[in-house]
Length: 378
Image 1 (spheres, rainbow, N blue to C red):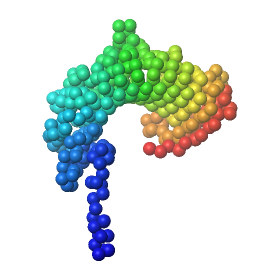
Image 2 (cartoon, rainbow, N blue to C red):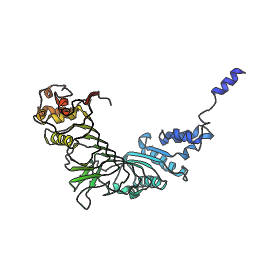
Image 3 (cartoon, helix red, strand yellow):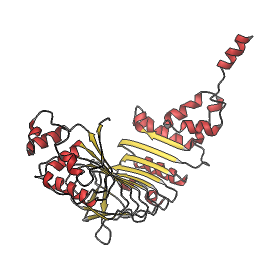
Image 4 (cartoon, rainbow, N blue to C red):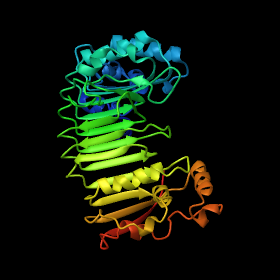
């Protein structure tokens, strides 16, 4: 009798006894394909997936694009249409039918989506314009790869009308000038806290203006194409700025008095001094920061400036922390250093990660700043 009762307890389906809200929350962490497959577990699970508040739809989870499109169509048709959609993450790196992406976006908008991620390869005209005026969106991640895949060749609307938006991540877009010959794509985002600009460019304008009284975190990633323009920051509540790539853009900080943390990971592909001098000008512009994190390659870009260590910095006097990430050099950047011959170690097969004296150069006005060397980990 004891053995039978013990066996019955072992066979109990405790997971299925949980409330629907708990099970649906668990299913939010897996892609939609696996979430729908739970319908075969038992009657309890048969229709549970139809109430999913979040959908993760990635074509890479399917063997063929045909099976992916068929799945997406059935999912949108069978999901409980009366329920709001909290989050939708859609990703397709290959070609996509315009009607499919239009249906997905319109479905999300019509169901009051709050967090929307779209990563597709198509023309921007295939994205319904309602995405740029959705008043329920709090988070938008938009990556539209153009059909020839040229970085930044997809034109972005001159301005957005997203009143509830707090987080924005844009990838592979070109910002166009407004009426005042400046690009100001974020001026209408009155609640924006977190902004990521990833491999974007500016066309027909000399200044990209990022003006926001609510912006707290700004991340910029740049490719190695020469695209010279100025970035004007007017963000009185900005706390964190992160940059990865080649610094070709002048930085104008007209109102960044609250900026405390800066993270820079820079590399260059030529021996020109333009990028190293621009990088140095950034430090002068970001004069009052308290925490600076740089990669080893960033320090080597700076070190290309002749007689750098003789310069008396008029900045970084409030620095409390300097962290150096010991990130390995890329092969191309190693070749750039060898071509520059700015220091003898660059001619060796394995150049040292940190140029001599450059750490002391950065903390010359804040000798009590804590210096940490961080081993790079992917």
